[in-house]
Image 1 (cartoon, rainbow, N blue to C red):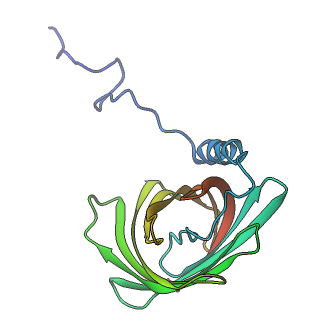
Image 2 (image 1 turned 180 degrees about the horizontal axis):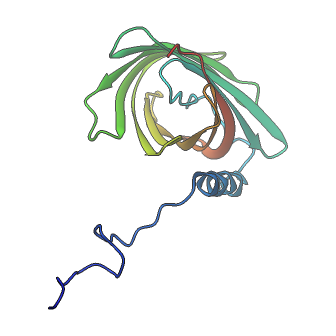
Length: 205
């Protein structure tokens, strides 16, 4: 008596997709390597255009950016005070000595899928030189695997006579309950630079 014909490879009981998962450590190592490959840009790559992305809703993120002979350290804090709203505060610096603070809010909107988090931001930008302004932005965070997330954020920078959109993309890999590593690429109007950093989640669960 003949058996039932199967369209799947021998020994398979579920549909065969042909896709194998990549382990999280390998993915993070590749991301960090890509960051430093892309960081070999001009010394003025880091600007005050893009703040660090805080993936977790109640957390602080510190980033370190190598830019030629100089380095910059930036920080951002997010605090969840409502199911939809987060308060945001950030500090960014540049090799030329320019600094800037941002203060504003993040509003979470309906995501495109269960593994996503989508949001809009409105922040007041206050640089050490120049005039203050309001900035409108948005972002998307995706859970790729347990403990591994990717993110992409964009901010509309209304510079007089030459407005542009600054971007920030990267990955976050959770080390334990509170700490995570971040690695990404800052895309601003004056250039671009890779960075690495750490995230500290101080929410109560």
